[in-house]
Length: 192
Image 1 (cartoon, one colour):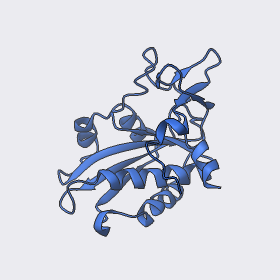
Image 2 (image 1 turned 180 degrees about the vertical axis):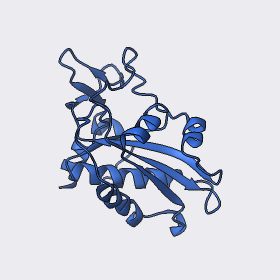
Image 3 (image 1 turned 120 degrees about the vertical axis):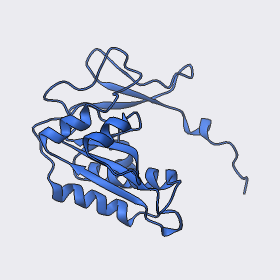
């Protein structure tokens, strides 16, 4: 059921590093993005698939992890992602692919959850370093990085209290994500 996949699709930041993700699996996830709707059917997104230790470390070095967790600098050895997908936009095809990026990434992450994997999208990326490390041509704008792996952490959804939406970890390392209530999101509803 779609709701179950959405509930399992959390921003996981710690993984079982020894659980590899093969290129075939990454291509299956990209195929979901390929089949997802795009603006004017332009299909300007391109993807870099990274799943080996050396290149994983290069990507890892360009990411900023969990801004709300001030005392945490990211996963430790043994908890790092097994693979990454770098989401690029070909600006020669289309300049403003923001909606397309969101749709494609959601398809990728829902597909990952269906396979027993999890991920985290990163907008906080040192794009200049990443571009240099992987010799990404100028026509490709680096939009997001998706970290993927077998989740090692438990994530719980809580109700927002006192308007505090910041995620946090408890003493058992359970990651808590506050969500606003449904009635707080609906601005207008028709009385029919």
